[in-house]
Image 1 (spheres, helix red, strand yellow):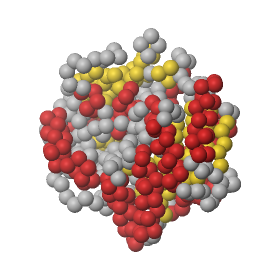
Image 2 (image 1 turned 135 degrees about the vertical axis):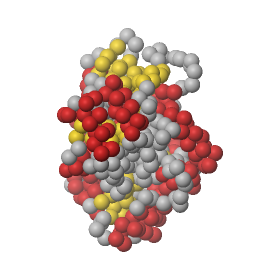
Image 3 (image 1 turned 60 degrees about the horizontal axis):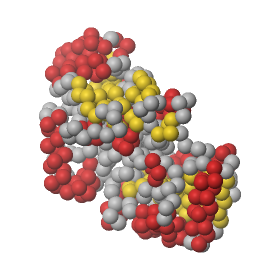
Image 4 (image 1 turned 90 degrees about the horizontal axis):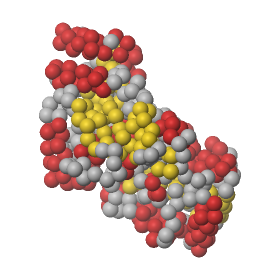
Amino acid sequence: MTTTTATWLAELTDALGRDSVLTDPDVTAAYARDQAMMAPAGLPAAVVFPRRTDDVAAVLRIASRHGIPVVPRGAGSGLAGGSNAVDGGITLVMTRMDAVLEVSTADRLAVVQPGVVNKQLRDAVAGSGLFYPPDPSSYDWCTIGGNLATNSGGLCCVKYGVTTDYVLGLEVVLADGRVLRTGRRTVKGVAGYDLARLFVGSEGTLGVITEATLALRPAPQAPVTLAASFATTAQAGQVVERVVTSELVPSLLEIMDGTCIRTVDQVLKAGLDHDTRALLVAQSDTGGAAAAQEIAVLTRLCEEAGAQFVHSTEDQAEGDLLLAARRMALPALERVGGAVLIDDVAVPRSRIAGFLDGCDAIAADRDVVIGVVGHAGDGNMHPTVCFDAGDADQRERAYAAFDDILALGLSLGGTITGEHGVGTIKLDWLEREIGPVALDVHRSIKAALDPAGLLNPGTVFRSTPVGATLGR
């Protein structure tokens, strides 16, 4: 440990207390990376656990004074390497700031700290007849701070939108330790730039979110659930298109490809048809006769498209079982090769079938297993490349397939990430998508708010562009 490191570590300990600053490498290594197993990660010199906004401000003032990189982190559920540690830096773990500070039924809002778990917030407002809609697949352990940092989505986005749609205001600690309060508590408000949404999706590169004022919605009714299987991707794609162009607004519309169906069935032993090319799962939560009618119309659309099988139910337990296959997709795929690269490409909903077929072609060309599951209602697909990480040839082919999928998404008019963020694994692909002018604007904003480049360096974009490949 150098004298310089010892100095700033002592300042951190004095400011936050010994139990809030961990330096044992065996302990800090546990906070080095998120769930993106192949993303690069360093080893932090310190893992710090603030309990209040003043603690965060103190950490950033010390880091700014000594030029120490700071990586904000929630529960580590991210899938793009966006909270991976920097060698010799500070990893700022926000999980002890986990209070729901206020629930206002009159104003339909909640004020929370960033360490609040998504499900914890849902449970906290449920007794008031309200709910917080954004529902990432990891909702039972991911934190609101992480959701804000990546602008998370989830299964219900088709009807309810994503995290940014529920942000009224934020408290953010800037790189120099100043505390910024932006946004409002009112439903409407256009005073000044919309700074709150600037920080949503910024992946910890512009400031550290320490408090959020979030809009709530009336709690949904018990859902009616539908599952439909198809012999071709074109049939499933036709249903999605007709849903979009009709008056239907299901609360959930998910899709699984044939690879996922076969893989999941190997785990669940649910008797799924291995010849099925695509499976749609939908829900309506409008309640009562309205929900039943909405599912009835969706049933008709599936049948007209040539569905092999259509089943709907109003029973909550049976509906949960129908969703079990969808939720099992990633764990099942992880068993195929032991290692996975989880992509996050969103395409226009009219191009979903083409995207599924394109992923099949990539899998054949690269000789890897690719299973696709996704949110058909908003076009956000999650192709998952399975491979043996110990096999150098498989690993190289898997990385190549990952890049091919990103190129496919862009060629279909899509985007390289719908909800996981750019992180550290898609740095150079961002420039391909947004172009040099937009990237220059990004860099200008970063320089204005974090001139020393200490906040989550190497995330979202590089300071100097290089070839567009997944970081090896």
